[in-house]
Image (cartoon, rainbow, N blue to C red; front, side, top):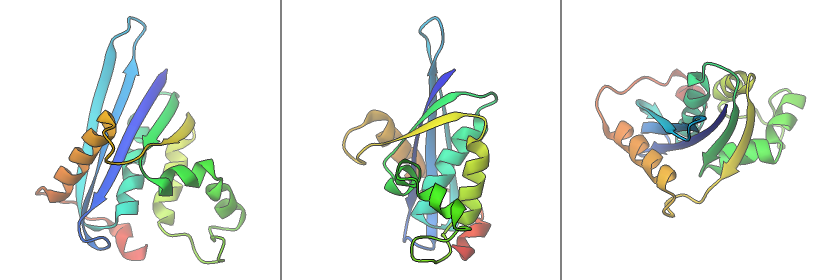
Length: 160
């Protein structure tokens, strides 16, 4: 099954303000019918990068069987990590970046790698706030979640 995962993250007062993510999963069945699901959640104190990661993680974790997934994001942090093979280097260097410093958000990177395992995943960057319909919708989901009530705790935000 071919799935497109659109995702965006937002944070108010980045870092350490409220934040949220918005994710849309889409696939077209054999009859040509488009199926779509939306996900979003808001967090009390977090960062934009953590929310970008959570959006992708949530979408991948929602899939119940192996799929071919195209992740579409306006986050170079997420797309370049895979397309420029940063993650491969981090793994080879025991989660150290090119400056020999610990990689930020290791908890979420590990969770993303685990969520990605059963799937064939490609990452595609799109320019944010440039009229891309699904990206704009994800932005609305993310910012609405960040501005909403019942915000969740992000325990990893304090160790970024």
